[in-house]
Length: 298
Ligand SMILES: Cc1cc2nc3c(=O)[nH]c(=O)nc-3n(C[C@H](O)[C@H](O)[C@H](O)COP(=O)(O)OP(=O)(O)OC[C@H]3O[C@@H](n4cnc5c(N)ncnc54)[C@H](O)[C@@H]3O)c2cc1C
Ligand code: FES
Image (cartoon, rainbow, N blue to C red; front, side, top):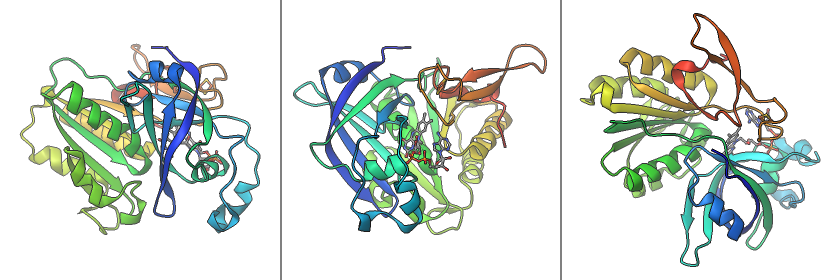
């Protein structure tokens, strides 16, 4: 699946969500619009933030003051949380980001009219297996963006599939979206927090175990989609195996090139042979993998 292009995006919005998160809207040029219009949820873009300016000094959190000084050379990978064509035919792509280092700090400093270079769409994206009637989306922390895209995609492209989202975070401040906005998506959404400050008190995987135990969804007609920290994905994979439910996980690796050249993003997977494993590339063969195939590193 490779119709990737090098294109430009113009910032049309950049809203801060709390201290650590932001939502960036980019209007893509004609080349980008043609390529991204049919991007699948779970695919991603490599964004060049090297020449973007840092936010003003008072808007740089103290713990990132040293990171702010670091020059960046490589593009940074980001999945999209929505992709829509406007009346003029140009695509607006939205990204949800967490401010962690020099690249995402620069993302926070972007304002309307700024231009960025992107390569994408990259990777494989989530797929819908035959005969599914139910989809359970399990997001952990910054795993939310591709699952937000997927929820919207399933609603429009597969209206016959019943979709439920379970989103987890350490506490109510750690969601990369406003909790009051979850009701506006038109998709049944529940939250869980490790410290019990919002929704179910406990890990989102414990909530998912309880939810699956109580639901009347037929296992053969159900698919689980998940994105989040690797330890959480390992638990989701276990849960899916216990319930004999098909499950896809979106993996994260440090990515230098994003296009299959540098081999920096290996994911160990089971092959057909008994106990045999091999390495696949997260950027090219993934980032979405069948959960039963992945050897999780945790
Ligand atoms: C396929 C894919 C999709 C992604 N989608 C999103 C998204 O939608 N929103 C978002 O905010 N982030 C996303 N990320 C992560 C994002 O790419 C990194 O947070 C970003 O590159 C950090 O850049 P930085 O220069 O700000 O910080 P850096 O200084 O590069 O990193 C800050 C910290 O984050 C860790 N880190 C950085 N990148 C990764 C990674 N890929 N895997 C594990 N740890 C990492 C570093 O080890 C370091 O501790 C995605 C990553 C991948 C691989
Ligand atoms: S990031 Fe270079 S091969 Fe995957």
